Picture 1 (cartoon, rainbow, N blue to C red):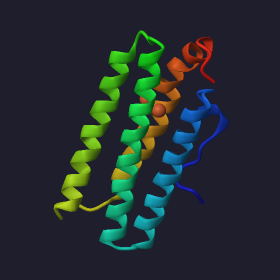
Picture 2 (cartoon, protein in one colour; picture 1 turned 45 degrees about the vertical axis):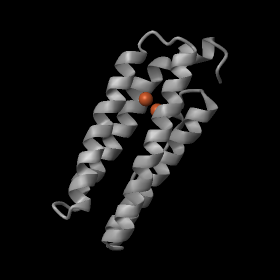
Picture 3 (cartoon, protein in one colour; picture 1 turned 120 degrees about the vertical axis):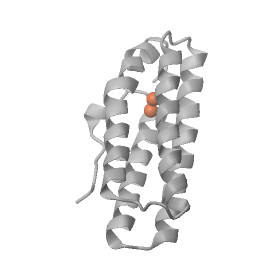
Picture 4 (cartoon, helix red, strand yellow; picture 1 turned 180 degrees about the vertical axis):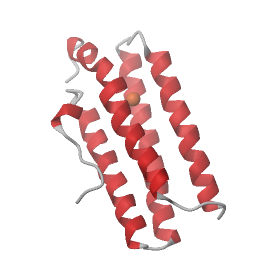
Amino acid sequence: MAFTTWKATLSVKVEQLDQQHKRLVDMINDLYEAMKAGTGKETTETILSELIDYTLVHFADEERLLTQHGYPDIADHIVLHEVFTQQVMEYDNKIKAGCSVLTLEVMMFLQTWLVGHIKCEDMKFSQFLNANGVK
Ligand SMILES: [Fe+2]
Ligand SMILES: [Fe+2]
């Protein structure tokens, strides 16, 4: 069973962003599978790095779209992305330095944050972007 799943209720009704959110969910599942299988430090670290890189690409694309269309709450939204990025980087640094390992707690943080952010924060700009012709 997948660790987390993308559901239609998570759709922000913008194709590009939905695709990216789906990929992030897939990457969290890949990371979970690697952790569970005990694939080894190198593999989990590589998958974690890929997840972080793709998260940054996604945040940048999302912020660009919101900026282009003059989303009024863009500043607050960027702060949320930054706080998450800092937290994930901290986990990543500790894991890579050998001071910590990828645990279920880290997985729960990634999953809860991502799904919660899409559902409660990204959802706020869904109607705004649609009204501006972005679908
Ligand atoms: Fe997003
Ligand atoms: Fe976002």
